[in-house]
Length: 223
Image (cartoon, rainbow, N blue to C red; front, side, top):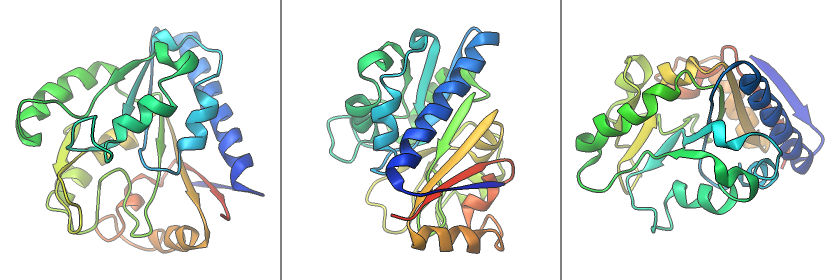
């Protein structure tokens, strides 16, 4: 794991957006398509604001979330809604979006369809992850019902139900996240830095982010 510290959050977000753009360009120079997985939530929003305007061949980029709540895009809790508002705009509107939600059934029922659409985009060219203060990443939560499967299984996606989460989640598996060619984790604030330090000493079952730290670049700034 490499840790990169920044003087302030704004600088970190701009720099990280440019790093990701450069890595996508490098991929497109040698591959027909590139794939970018990103988290939801408020933290990566400023990265999206910069990245969406970057001049690259977005028509050859597949974009997907690392995880999604099992809610329609019209919901305020939809991560897809955030992407459509802040990443899949401007030049990045030409990218192909691979959803982690589908109407017509439960998370379990729709999983094969969603996984089939994602499979050709793997391994991920670039994966951006966040981390919660509880040391979860994507929707791989401590205490979740499918924690062991998501950490150790070989499937692309897993449905997850976790204490305190009002709806089911869909998450990329730790296997898929680890297979990403380039992996970045972005965190802000002293609490999350302390959580990262703790995760380095814990097992993935206790701190799921520990499953994806090896080979990752962690970007941190004090909020």
